[in-house]
Each structure stands twice: as C-alpha cells, then as structure tokens.
Length: 85
Figure 1 (cartoon, one colour):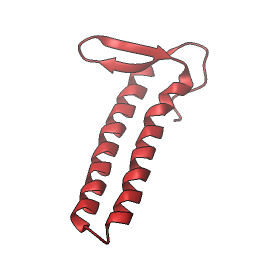
Figure 2 (figure 1 turned 180 degrees about the horizontal axis):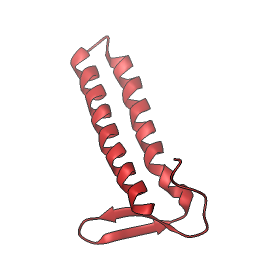
Figure 3 (figure 1 turned 30 degrees about the horizontal axis):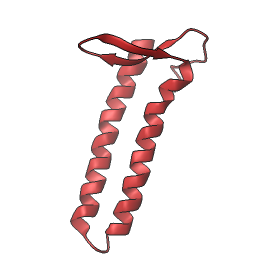
C-alpha cells in the first residue's frame, strides 16, 4: 500500500509468464487483489463459524483453504508491487 502512489501514468495490473504484462490500468485498481482476498477470508470465516457445530472437518477445511488463498494473494500482491516499483 505504501509503495503504490496515486499517479496519472497507468501501472501494470497483471503479469503472465507466457505473455508478460497483459493488463494495465489506473493505480487504484491494484487494490482489487487485496479486497478479493479479504472477501474470501470473511466468507470462509463466516461459513466455518456456522458449520463448526455441525461438521468440524469442513470448518477446518474452509479455514485451511482461506489461509492458502491468502498466501497466494500475498505472493501475487508482492510480485505486482515489485513489478511496478
């Protein structure tokens, strides 16, 4: 968040190993990735909390998937910031 500053120039939003940079846009669109990660975390936490009384395995599986998604989103966000700095 501290590395991406408001600017008029477009920044890279997506990088693909095969094609290179394939999406550019406004600086504020780079924050979509963390917002999606937060949404996934909140939905999985709520579902895990609701299902904990019925099936503890499903609740734990949802929490594991949520943490796994967060790790991948953190890596993608770090690479995206590194690409734009």
